[in-house]
Length: 330
Image 1 (tube, rainbow, N blue to C red):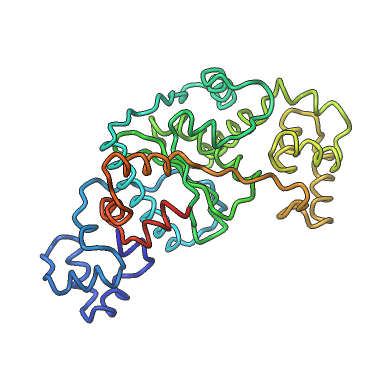
Image 2: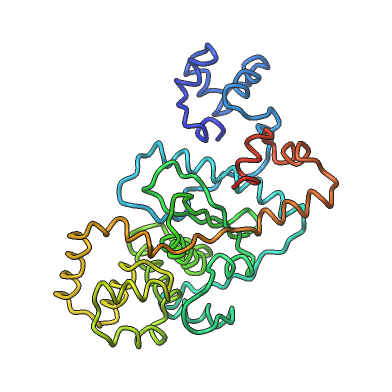
């Protein structure tokens, strides 16, 4: 886990500590006990305190991603390893604080649109646009973490800790509109797939997209906005209201049959002609939402236990600098 989190192969680690790849493989698989000298060297090379390697807990399989089609396996391995580290640490913290599992419903047996409607009703969300998606999640017990995925090809990921606490990771590089949609997308996975986990496929990703669209842009609330002639300027005006991208609004209008296929193609061609398909106009940027629940929980626990920053870093089994990067300066 530590090696993969650093993006280092067995052969590279072996070279750094002056041993063979075979030895690294045997130590990792538990075939042979590692000697103390090699153990100290590995901890130093990987940049973890020795206590890190004595944590208990299972390693979770790859979770739900919102990503583009092709992402290198090596990058995904680094992401999975780091998210598993977060999962262990956050799980231990929440267990120590005796924090109960949030009541996240299981909507796996209904349509994505019905699931979004049911959850908005359950969480008493007012009709219309959601002012702050991150606040909605955190108020309902879902931890949100802004995470450096080291690639722009992965937007987000969601997991459950061993005690079933949901955690959503979003790419630090996301713009405000894409961030909100990614949060809603991962929420869809949590309520539809996390408790009756399917093998991730195109269909489950499509369902999460449908959920996100209905959760952020409820059909009954947004239809009135689509009764006008839909142009790029219309989409720009609606972006500031609904706090989603112009393209998300375009696809929503098409899905609700307020754009013909030809109109949709024409508008998309305008996006391409104006070079705003990958980056919409700066003046329309939506402010990025900032998560705070996890930071508040850590502060509360540190004060309760009368811990210094050094103490809490040791509790998380990290060096102080990495603890700060992951949990303080995030």
